[in-house]
Structures are given as structure tokens and as C-alpha cells.
Image 1 (tube, rainbow over the protein chains, first blue to last red):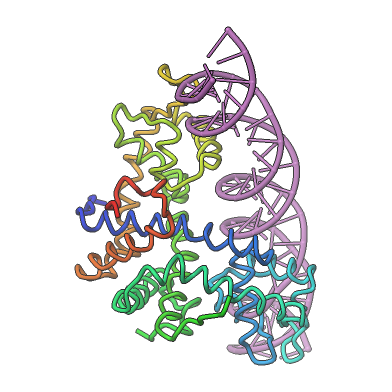
Image 2 (image 1 turned 180 degrees about the vertical axis):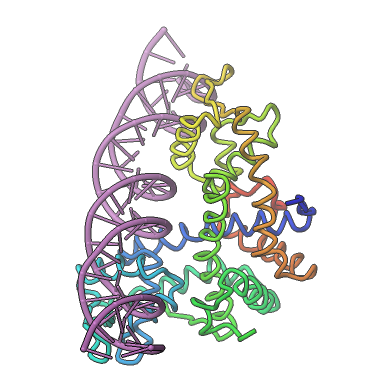
Length: 162
Length: 162
DNA sequence: TCGCTTTAGTTGTCGCTTCAACTAAAGCGT
DNA sequence: ACGCTTTAGTTGAAGCGACAACTAAAGCGA
């Protein structure tokens, strides 16, 4: 393991990426918690469900689309169900599986939270970037995700096949 | 709050950024935990201390350089001190302040962990990017951090003043 | 149809982060 | 010298996520 150290430019990029991954979750959680009583991950789960056919997805599919482990999702969906934002239904075709269904309350919650969240994302992320940088970020994101999620378990749905 | 929704390109960039912030911490933590018994944040704290004069920094300065709240850092440094990787010393010039000092064990730990960590960062991040993309990522990172850390409390040390 | 393996999901425990509350010292105005 | 405010840091409780262990159903080979 001979240390092939980072050069100046690589270190600069790496430090910024680390800082972003530390700071971004807090920025998202703070706004959503204050305005909608949701963490960003909870919001994301509800938002993904809201776009699914019948507002319903299998736990495994939902986990993939939210970049989460099944364990994490299971805990979160249980809490969301306790708040009546989501309902869990046994899947008729496969008795092992569970369907997560967005309730009317859940729909209302995510619809109510969306505008504030979008404007927060604009204010803290997208408005800082030029159109060219947004395109570059898509490319960079695909490149990184091809390593971070090499098997495409999580991000296969929107990333180009390699 | 009229919802100015994201267009396709903005949504693509945003989804990728969210996925990265969800997946990257796990990739870093898993390798460092397995090979060195450290979380990435703990490693980062030790690494920052290792580069400071006398391997020592005030808690507040250390918090800034690690993108952390003082609360989070206080807990982490206490745990590191219990493992004898760090020693806390009262600051002679300011009786309110605490200096965190990297012990010899801490130094050995971070030096031992660095090569594996760097090669993990290469394998999962930097090797996926071209030289141009690394430069683009620095620019994008600066742009994002100017919003995420608008007051420059955390990242002022390596980001250009606006 | 029997048993083995894989898949789907849940649960309990533990560790880490956040939030609120707190102590204590420094700075500062008068 | 006196309070008031700010700064530095710690602490305890609560909540979330990771890991390991588990149940149960499906797939599949002989």
C-alpha cells in the first residue's frame, strides 16, 4: 500500500466534497424540520412514493430509489406509519414483501412541504451554479456514483448503464 | 412561495448530489472502521490535528476546520481522549478555552490509517474523475460552500474570499 | 416433496449527532 | 468595580442509523 498522495488540486476537490457532505444534510434537515416536521430523508421517501403508481412501492424498490438500506427504510417507514403518513400493506403476489402506500395525509404533507424545500434547494445549491456547472455536476455525479454504487443497486434507475 | 420547479437538468444534478451525500459517508466509514477502528469524522479530526503546529488546536478552531458543531466535536474529542488518541489541555491564555492535542498514539493511528484511506478515496472518488472534472469540482464546491456556509464559519480557511 | 439457499423484511441493541440547558470566563460599557 | 452580553465549551436526554440476528416465504435442485 504505497501512499500515492493527493496533489493540490485533488486535495482541494476532496476537501470541498467532504465539507459539502457534512454541511448539506444539516441545511436540508433544518428547513424541513422547522417548516414541515420532517427530516430530509423522510421527505424524500414521501416524495418518491408520491410519484409512484398508486402512490405505492415495495420496500426494496423504495430503498433503492432513496439510496437507503432496507434496515434504515424499515425503521423510517414504521415511524411514518405511526404518524399516519404512510400505510404498510402485505403484498398479495409475494407474501414476503411489503408495500408502502402514501396516505392522503402523507400526500398533503409532501405537497405542502415541496415549495419550501425546492426554494431551499435553489437558495443553497442550484442558484449558486451556472447552467454549465449544473451540466458538469451531472457528469461528475454519474462518474462518482459509478464507484460509490458500483453495482447500481441504488442509483441504477437514473444513471446511464455503463 | 410560488413553486419554481426544477427543470430536467437541475433535477438530474440534484438527485445525484443527494445520492452522493447519502452514499459517500458509508463508503468512508466502512473502510476506516474496518482497517483503523475510526469513523471518517474521527479520522478527519486526527488528520487535521496532525497538521497543526504542535499537533494542537483550540476546540473552536478544530470545529471550523472539520465542518462540525462544537457540540459534536466535544463528544468526539472526549471519546478520542478515552482511547488516549487525544489529550485535552486547558488553554493558559484563555481559561474558557480547551486545547486538543494529538498524542503519540493518535499520531501513530492517523499515520497508519492514512495510506488505506487515501487509496479508498482514490478508488471511490478521484479515479472516477478526469483532471478537468477535478478542476470543475473545485469550482462547483466553492460555489456551493459559499451558500452552505455563507458566513464562512467552517470553510473560510481554504475557500477564496468572496 | 424434501431440504437448501436466496430474498424480503423486521427487530433489538448500541453508538453517534442534535438539541436544549448549563457553567464559567472574557469583554465591555459606565 | 459593577453588571450585561458574548464567547468557549460541556453535559444529558432523545432520536436516528448501522450491525447482527432473526422470521418467514420463495425458488430450486434432486
